[in-house]
Length: 310
Ligand SMILES: [Zn+2]
Image 1 (cartoon, rainbow, N blue to C red):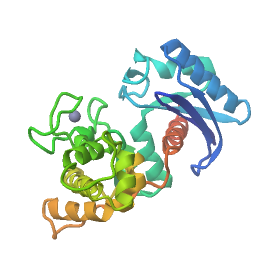
Image 2 (cartoon, rainbow, N blue to C red):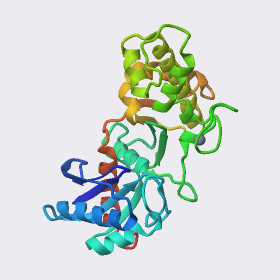
Image 3 (cartoon, rainbow, N blue to C red):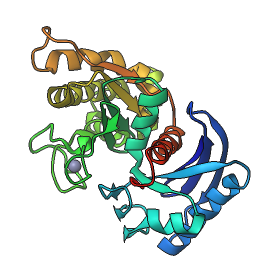
Image 4 (tube, rainbow, N blue to C red):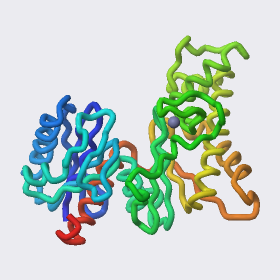
């Protein structure tokens, strides 16, 4: 059975035909339009391009935003035009195919748990480290979404009381200390404590590159990120005791710079340190396509479970 997974991002809508093994057969991409009506039309057109060539049985739509518990309605997506829109039903009517929605981090976690580095893990957590942190949990093969569909907001766990301000309105959130943005902010803070080749306003990528080249300020900023990654993973483990934690997102491309140190901090900070099994902390198998692959897998599983669920 073939299904289409769609990654509805703030800049582009990317779709892929995916088979039951998580293999992508073909992709198609368009720019993300600015209004909700245009967005629905663009997604429908993107899916049609693929559905005209392959016999697809359903569509999974992954969105960076809050999705209703029944996976039919986008409640709020900060970078998209939808506000409380029954996206799944509108698109299903347009396409004549079953459509199911999912949060993009959840879709990526499903891809890793079904086909990637967390294959078969009973409890798998995904920590997507980019400009912020996106989180997802797959427990017993099912996405854990809490009572109201918004769990888990891992990026906004408070690690540092009265710490750095976060756009969410709180202070000291995990993603303020462990993200590309955080890496840049820490490097700026540490400037003056040694010679550095970094520009005045570095990006996280600048800091990672400078650390590769041996820049002392950048290396200290990376060490800070490793510490906070480890501290955060300890909290996640204290609550969920995952078998595998998958690190994804742009910052995970530089994992060789900080992963060993992060594991040490994690092992030291977790409750019962030294007397319990630890989660295996691994870099994601899939890159960006994880979202499309996971969305397609969710669409397939919903189609197989029958129309009552849809
Ligand atoms: Zn926050």
